[in-house]
Figure 1 (tube, rainbow, N blue to C red):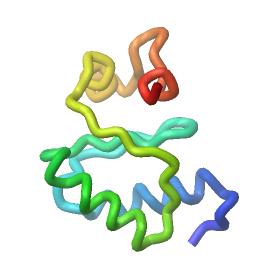
Figure 2 (tube, one colour):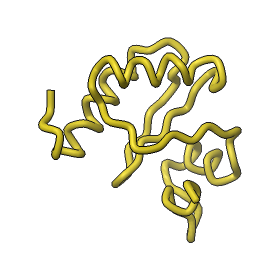
Figure 3 (cartoon, one colour):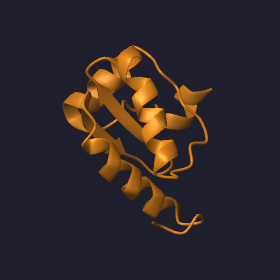
Figure 4 (cartoon, rainbow, N blue to C red):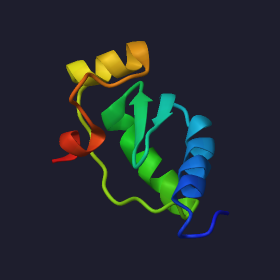
Amino acid sequence: MPAPHDQAGCRDHAVGALTALEGVRETRTEEAALTLFLSDGFGTVAQVVRLLDSTAVPVDSLTLSAPTLDEVFLRATGNRLEGSSAEEEAS
């Protein structure tokens, strides 16, 4: 398990654990965020939180939303729309 101060290690650990979870279609990592694409967001979010808790991966915040235009663009291209960032969406 990565050291608590190793953010990249924690994120990699989370991705490894989440990849095997049913309902997680895809994961994308960014500088300070992890974006999950779920088959059934509302049905899967509790499992995601339990899995992260059981693997001691810290979660600073969690947002569940229907895909925005930016998220659809991110999924299709691998990039966010110009002028958009994970921090802006969290506020």
